[in-house]
Length: 298
Length: 277
Image (cartoon, rainbow over all chains, first blue to last red; front, side, top):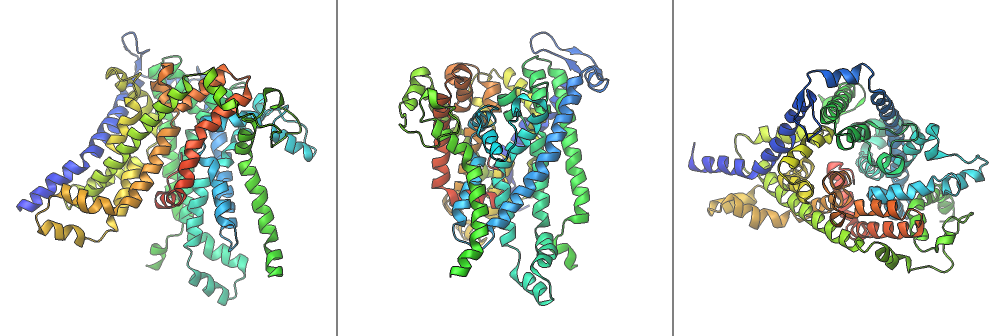
């Protein structure tokens, strides 16, 4: 090894040290530590007790019905909000991909709700969804819809949360828009020459070309929505009748309100595994519907 | 021209309707913040208050003098966090793009692996670790992680540095410049677009952070704006005009940043697909 190679090795290690240390101290270490917590009964004050698989058993054998409730709520939210968010973001991107005036203004307007701090967002939506004077019911009233109790009716809290999540599609919309703008015009022209109409060229050229972006938004969207927390914490505190008790909220309560660290860590691991499982499944299925230009050319 | 204008009409109508819906929450907030208490829940709603009550804003500070303190706390945490993100991503990004060394691909693989890890599994152990370190109740847990670097920002910086021509460093290397000097004097000035993007997103991330302060901050005078707003709403929840005035004040810094740096926002999202919150 020459002197300059040695120097580069030393510098390479030194420059990347913050990240490597961070990965060990903030990811690997805590994750291992969290595995230890799974077998403990510990309230942070008295000495921790070793309880073996007791935390896991409590979760499986139904002694904590709230776990199943939170699992259901989280899946409900994910299965409705992620596809609807993708559709909304893609629809907005298609609108903004037209050669029209005023695009920049609309793009700004569609994006702004996404940067609103979560607490202010939640606080204003409490009012928008108010059964008596909220604007949403006023607007629905124009179309003859009877006032809905939204956050006070367990049947409507989850739809309300899904609805609110549609206001936050700005970043996904920008990613779609960038993808739409990078679809090569030559491909579309070639399709037109071959006799494809606008709809066919959209279906067979545009959609495959941006399928990797659908995939990216889907993966990121699922990871994010499984960890939904803030709105439920602020707006409904998990209620009414635990209809907005999402998994992260359940974990938060077990850990920081009831100080059952071992059980909370077990719940967190379960959620972690669910999310990783869904991510892996999505990558597996990606081959069947995501189109990569470089692959098809060989 | 006339036919073209008519052809665009459906498009404009759709965008108008959607635009109004997207702005509705914000407009309601700004409008209610200027109403007297009795008129907040008037139906049908009056969007532009007849006599705008600007006094609502100073009244927030009268009701809760600590509110100005929340701004100071938030800006401290936000600046420390953003500075850490920029510095760490410059250092690590340089090590992963412009120095050739045997472990580079392994570290880059580690970076990609942490990009998608859901953070929920580390919340509890990290809390206990910070508790052992006697740092619960201080601002440190809110910004220390930034100084180790977040994978997203490092990835963005590394991608950007990869696009800079190789000859830049080689000429300096011939002259015997050390890596650190090359980074500091040659590469960093060229990375200002990436630095700006990272600074903006890191600012937003720390400014909007809710769970962090919720877990680690308990003394009222140490609240950030997010906790402070929640506290204000809890204590003065009947005064919705004041709650909205307080909400507006927490949003204005973000809006100012957004309009000042809109182009960077769009570029940054396109570069990484990073969500805005």
